[in-house]
Image (cartoon, rainbow, N blue to C red):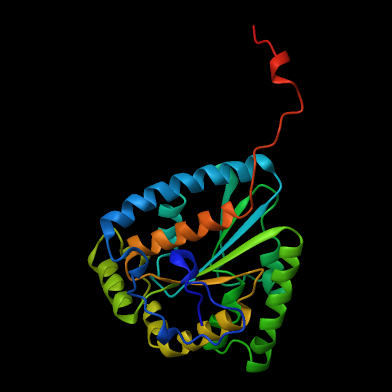
Length: 274
C-alpha cells in the first residue's frame, strides 16, 4: 500500500495499489515520534530550505513545479499554503483555486481550464483543488455518469504524464482529516465571529456524504498514483504535523532536481563598479 521510508516515504502511495482511506490514520504523528516541539524546530529549518530551493528554481529558469492540494472541507489547504510556503518568494509562486466551472469553461473539456494554469519555467504553482474535483465531487454529486468519471482516470494519467515529459515536476497531496476533526474545525468557525465568513452551511451536506467522498478519493488516488505524478496521503488532524510532512516532501522533491544557480555570461573579475 505505501512505502515505509522515513517521513517522506511513509505517506507516498505505491502506483497500482488499492487505496482504502479508512486504513490511513489521519491522527498519525509517528514520523516525528509525536514530539511537537521537535517537529516545530525541524519545520522551521525545512521552510528555510524550501525558500532557498525555490530561489534556485526561479533563478535557473529550467524546472517547473506543480503542487496539487486536495482535501475535505477544513482539511487545511489554505493553512498549508500559508505555513509551508512562508519563506518562498511570491514572485516565483502562484496559487490557483478552481471553483465551480463558469459558463465559458463548461464549453470545453474539463482539463482545458487546468492546462492553462500549469507552471512555466522557473515557476512553482499550487492548485488549491484541481482537476481531481472532476473525478471526486462530480462523482459524488452525480454530475456525470459512472462511465464518464471512470474513463477520466486514464485521461488524467495521460495528461500528467505529458506534463512530466515536458519538464513539469508534479507532487500531489491529499490532506487527510477525520470526520471527528472536521466537526471540531467547523464548530470553531461557527463559534468565532472573525471566522464565520469561512463557514458555509452547504458544507454540512457534503459532510453527510463522507463515506462516498472517501470511496471517491480512494479510487482517484489509487488509480492516478504514478512515478511521474506521485500522491502523498498526509495525516492532517494535527496541523503542525501536516505542515511538517508537506514541507519535508517538498524539500526532498526539490533537492532531487539537483538545481544550481546559473553561471554568469560575463567574467565577474573584469567588472568595476565606480
